[in-house]
Image (cartoon, rainbow, N blue to C red; front, side, top):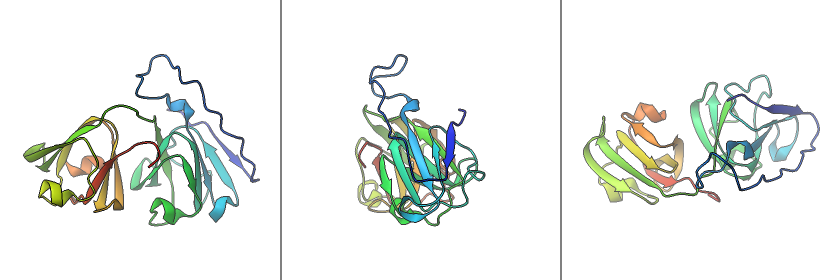
Length: 209
Protein backbone atom coordinates (compact mmCIF):
# COMPACT_ATOMS: atom_id res chain seq x y z
CA UNK A 1 0.00 0.00 0.00
CA UNK A 2 1.48 3.35 -0.94
CA UNK A 3 1.98 5.95 1.78
CA UNK A 4 0.21 9.30 1.64
CA UNK A 5 1.96 11.36 4.27
CA UNK A 6 2.78 14.99 4.97
CA UNK A 7 5.27 16.70 7.26
CA UNK A 8 4.42 19.99 8.99
CA UNK A 9 6.52 22.49 10.92
CA UNK A 10 3.64 24.31 12.62
CA UNK A 11 1.06 23.00 15.06
CA UNK A 12 -1.98 23.28 12.80
CA UNK A 13 -3.69 20.05 11.80
CA UNK A 14 -6.58 19.89 9.35
CA UNK A 15 -9.67 18.52 11.06
CA UNK A 16 -10.47 14.94 10.18
CA UNK A 17 -13.74 14.36 8.34
CA UNK A 18 -15.48 11.00 8.57
CA UNK A 19 -16.38 9.49 5.15
CA UNK A 20 -19.68 7.95 4.25
CA UNK A 21 -20.56 4.67 5.96
CA UNK A 22 -21.71 3.21 2.61
CA UNK A 23 -18.72 1.60 0.92
CA UNK A 24 -18.87 -0.82 -1.97
CA UNK A 25 -16.71 -3.91 -1.98
CA UNK A 26 -16.26 -4.16 1.79
CA UNK A 27 -17.97 -6.37 4.31
CA UNK A 28 -20.46 -4.51 6.47
CA UNK A 29 -18.31 -5.44 9.44
CA UNK A 30 -15.18 -3.72 8.10
CA UNK A 31 -14.87 -0.08 7.17
CA UNK A 32 -12.55 1.10 4.38
CA UNK A 33 -8.85 1.63 5.21
CA UNK A 34 -8.85 5.11 3.66
CA UNK A 35 -10.59 6.54 6.74
CA UNK A 36 -7.48 6.40 8.91
CA UNK A 37 -5.09 9.15 9.90
CA UNK A 38 -2.29 9.27 12.45
CA UNK A 39 -0.05 12.20 13.41
CA UNK A 40 3.37 11.69 15.01
CA UNK A 41 4.96 14.50 17.03
CA UNK A 42 8.61 14.80 18.02
CA UNK A 43 7.76 16.62 21.24
CA UNK A 44 5.51 15.73 24.14
CA UNK A 45 1.99 17.17 24.28
CA UNK A 46 1.78 17.44 20.47
CA UNK A 47 4.60 19.95 20.19
CA UNK A 48 7.37 20.39 17.65
CA UNK A 49 7.78 18.97 14.18
CA UNK A 50 5.08 16.53 13.24
CA UNK A 51 4.15 14.17 10.47
CA UNK A 52 0.74 13.11 9.20
CA UNK A 53 0.05 9.73 7.59
CA UNK A 54 -3.04 7.90 6.31
CA UNK A 55 -1.62 4.57 5.12
CA UNK A 56 1.10 2.02 5.83
CA UNK A 57 4.70 3.24 6.01
CA UNK A 58 7.63 0.81 6.19
CA UNK A 59 10.24 3.43 7.19
CA UNK A 60 9.49 6.72 8.93
CA UNK A 61 13.14 7.75 9.40
CA UNK A 62 13.11 10.59 6.86
CA UNK A 63 10.01 12.14 8.43
CA UNK A 64 10.98 12.50 12.11
CA UNK A 65 13.83 11.68 14.50
CA UNK A 66 11.84 10.57 17.53
CA UNK A 67 8.22 10.32 18.63
CA UNK A 68 7.02 11.58 22.00
CA UNK A 69 3.30 12.05 21.32
CA UNK A 70 0.69 10.75 18.87
CA UNK A 71 -2.77 11.78 17.80
CA UNK A 72 -4.99 9.21 16.02
CA UNK A 73 -7.93 10.86 14.28
CA UNK A 74 -9.22 7.85 12.38
CA UNK A 75 -8.83 4.11 12.09
CA UNK A 76 -6.72 1.69 14.13
CA UNK A 77 -2.94 1.51 13.89
CA UNK A 78 0.02 -0.61 14.85
CA UNK A 79 3.25 1.36 15.33
CA UNK A 80 6.59 -0.46 15.34
CA UNK A 81 9.90 0.35 16.98
CA UNK A 82 11.91 -0.69 13.90
CA UNK A 83 11.54 -0.32 10.09
CA UNK A 84 9.65 -2.87 8.02
CA UNK A 85 7.14 -3.57 10.82
CA UNK A 86 9.62 -5.09 13.28
CA UNK A 87 10.50 -4.57 16.93
CA UNK A 88 8.15 -3.56 19.72
CA UNK A 89 4.52 -3.23 18.63
CA UNK A 90 2.12 -0.58 19.91
CA UNK A 91 -1.63 -0.77 19.32
CA UNK A 92 -3.12 2.69 18.80
CA UNK A 93 -6.83 3.39 18.66
CA UNK A 94 -8.50 6.70 17.98
CA UNK A 95 -7.51 9.25 20.61
CA UNK A 96 -4.65 11.35 21.95
CA UNK A 97 -1.37 10.13 23.45
CA UNK A 98 0.56 13.15 24.83
CA UNK A 99 3.46 10.99 26.10
CA UNK A 100 4.94 7.72 24.80
CA UNK A 101 4.30 6.00 28.13
CA UNK A 102 0.56 6.24 27.42
CA UNK A 103 0.87 3.76 24.52
CA UNK A 104 3.05 1.59 26.82
CA UNK A 105 6.13 2.57 24.85
CA UNK A 106 9.50 1.19 25.89
CA UNK A 107 11.19 4.19 24.25
CA UNK A 108 10.35 7.12 21.95
CA UNK A 109 11.36 5.35 18.75
CA UNK A 110 8.75 4.69 16.04
CA UNK A 111 10.12 3.58 12.67
CA UNK A 112 7.14 2.06 10.81
CA UNK A 113 3.36 1.86 11.06
CA UNK A 114 0.41 -0.07 9.66
CA UNK A 115 -3.26 0.77 9.48
CA UNK A 116 -6.10 -1.73 9.61
CA UNK A 117 -9.83 -1.11 9.18
CA UNK A 118 -12.10 -0.93 12.22
CA UNK A 119 -13.94 -4.20 12.73
CA UNK A 120 -17.58 -4.62 13.78
CA UNK A 121 -18.13 -8.36 13.46
CA UNK A 122 -17.77 -11.47 15.65
CA UNK A 123 -14.60 -12.63 17.41
CA UNK A 124 -13.26 -16.15 17.63
CA UNK A 125 -9.85 -17.78 18.03
CA UNK A 126 -8.21 -21.01 19.15
CA UNK A 127 -5.01 -21.15 21.20
CA UNK A 128 -2.65 -24.12 21.58
CA UNK A 129 0.11 -24.97 24.03
CA UNK A 130 2.23 -26.62 21.31
CA UNK A 131 3.55 -25.43 17.93
CA UNK A 132 1.75 -26.29 14.69
CA UNK A 133 -1.64 -25.92 16.37
CA UNK A 134 -1.25 -29.08 18.43
CA UNK A 135 -1.47 -30.07 22.10
CA UNK A 136 -4.06 -28.63 24.44
CA UNK A 137 -6.54 -26.32 22.70
CA UNK A 138 -9.09 -23.80 23.93
CA UNK A 139 -11.47 -21.59 21.96
CA UNK A 140 -12.16 -18.00 22.95
CA UNK A 141 -14.67 -15.41 21.88
CA UNK A 142 -14.01 -12.86 24.62
CA UNK A 143 -11.20 -11.08 26.46
CA UNK A 144 -8.93 -12.91 28.88
CA UNK A 145 -7.09 -10.87 31.55
CA UNK A 146 -5.21 -13.93 32.85
CA UNK A 147 -4.36 -16.75 30.44
CA UNK A 148 -3.10 -19.18 33.06
CA UNK A 149 -6.30 -19.01 35.12
CA UNK A 150 -8.44 -20.05 32.15
CA UNK A 151 -6.10 -22.05 29.90
CA UNK A 152 -3.99 -23.63 32.68
CA UNK A 153 -0.87 -23.17 30.57
CA UNK A 154 1.50 -20.22 30.71
CA UNK A 155 2.62 -20.52 27.09
CA UNK A 156 0.80 -20.16 23.78
CA UNK A 157 2.94 -21.67 21.04
CA UNK A 158 0.43 -21.35 18.19
CA UNK A 159 -3.04 -20.07 17.48
CA UNK A 160 -5.72 -19.73 14.83
CA UNK A 161 -7.54 -16.42 14.50
CA UNK A 162 -10.86 -17.18 12.86
CA UNK A 163 -12.68 -13.88 13.32
CA UNK A 164 -11.72 -10.39 14.37
CA UNK A 165 -8.50 -8.70 15.43
CA UNK A 166 -6.80 -9.64 18.70
CA UNK A 167 -3.93 -8.39 20.86
CA UNK A 168 -1.65 -10.65 22.91
CA UNK A 169 0.08 -9.13 25.94
CA UNK A 170 3.22 -10.37 27.63
CA UNK A 171 1.80 -10.07 31.15
CA UNK A 172 -1.62 -10.50 32.79
CA UNK A 173 -4.09 -7.60 32.86
CA UNK A 174 -3.02 -6.31 29.44
CA UNK A 175 0.50 -5.20 30.34
CA UNK A 176 3.91 -5.59 28.75
CA UNK A 177 4.80 -6.20 25.14
CA UNK A 178 1.92 -6.21 22.67
CA UNK A 179 1.35 -8.40 19.61
CA UNK A 180 -1.27 -7.67 16.99
CA UNK A 181 -2.97 -10.67 15.33
CA UNK A 182 -5.30 -10.60 12.36
CA UNK A 183 -7.26 -13.58 10.96
CA UNK A 184 -5.02 -16.45 9.93
CA UNK A 185 -2.94 -19.36 11.22
CA UNK A 186 0.07 -18.74 13.46
CA UNK A 187 1.96 -22.02 13.67
CA UNK A 188 4.72 -20.69 15.93
CA UNK A 189 4.98 -17.75 18.30
CA UNK A 190 7.56 -16.18 15.99
CA UNK A 191 4.76 -15.77 13.44
CA UNK A 192 3.32 -12.95 15.56
CA UNK A 193 6.75 -11.45 16.26
CA UNK A 194 7.47 -13.00 19.67
CA UNK A 195 10.75 -14.56 20.76
CA UNK A 196 9.07 -16.73 23.39
CA UNK A 197 5.65 -18.27 23.91
CA UNK A 198 4.76 -16.43 27.12
CA UNK A 199 1.33 -14.76 26.84
CA UNK A 200 -0.16 -13.36 30.04
CA UNK A 201 -3.41 -11.94 28.66
CA UNK A 202 -5.22 -11.10 25.44
CA UNK A 203 -8.24 -9.18 24.28
CA UNK A 204 -10.32 -8.34 21.27
CA UNK A 205 -9.30 -5.22 19.42
CA UNK A 206 -12.40 -3.06 19.40
CA UNK A 207 -13.18 0.62 18.98
CA UNK A 208 -12.83 2.56 22.18
CA UNK A 209 -10.16 0.37 23.84
